Length: 203
Length: 203
DNA sequence: TCGTGTTTTGACCAAATGGTCAAGGCCACG
DNA sequence: CGTGGCCTTGACCATTTGGTCAAAACACGA
Image (tube, each protein chain N blue to C red):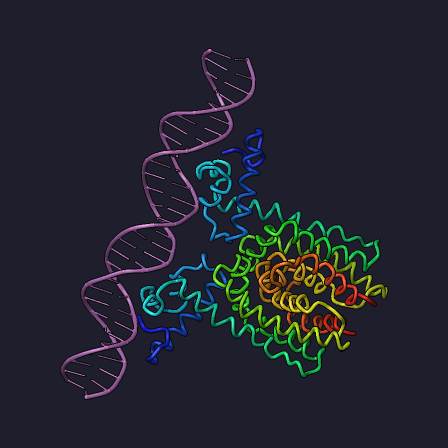
């Protein structure tokens, strides 16, 4: 088995191909619903070849999850304590909505994992995620204390941003079924959410 | 195999037991992740006995989903066109939040199904669900036209209620991991959401 | 071009899993 | 208290699936 840090060109390319195929399949069927054969087919490789690059199905899944955790938190990291409070929070919500548009598979991968109790992510949730959220919650609480935004619970504010934006990726089929064809859910959500958060945050 | 409409006391009881066990297992592991053995163990019955009451694993799942669809929509049905607009919408949000508290398994069952593309619910989404939502959207639009609430898109308002409330059931592990112990997420959400929707709806 | 280390795969395995079936147990009613 | 029909189950089956392995194919520097 090649080391986790790929050395050759082929290894780099194939590991990438596999992870992309796995993201496609895991996000659509969940961990248990995905099979190595499906991932192999999607990647255009043979099943034993997958297992040449990763030791197990679970290893592929774990690799995906940990790679994604970082990307996923970037928008929140970018929340600037020195910026304008309302603008910063609106920008955060907008970035999250853009991620629902541009990376729906990633969003569904997380959703699948968390709905099922996050068996492979507990540590990350209570660790990195909680730390970052607590840190930013402090920033938001300070803004509220200064009267620059309404005095609302920062944790639940963050939850509301997560749920409102990820809904458009995770529940995409439902949103589309209800809206019918010929509408652009995310473009509409952009306007709706801008309005919602402006009203919520106004001091 | 007993008919779908149970006739004897034993049938009624066992079908109930099985559906409850299945709800527990399906909501926690998804359709593919759940096994008949798990459901049988949870129900305290033997695997062949399950299959005496239901023709297949899929039949159990489908029965659960269709039974639940009704319960799930009840709160929205109760939205009264003749009531006070803000009060009606707040009450709807509160009822949905109560369902997240009282029936988290049901919420997760749906979430699992929809995140994975709703392979067994497409029809229900584009049918009953869309019809009901469209009907209530008309009511809300009328309220807005009369200037009794802010002029916001009714479909996205409904989506926002769904996502904000179900988040506390579906992403429960994440919410708890981030909040830490010693807090009551849903009680806090109740206050937060009341405030959020009041501000959003104010004309 | 050759030789070595890397990459790929067909064939295979063991375990898990949805589902079947025939036989036995049990309950209710006459 | 007997019997017909309802309920339960141990044993079994076919398929799916994660994973192994030895051998073949290939890439590439010397």
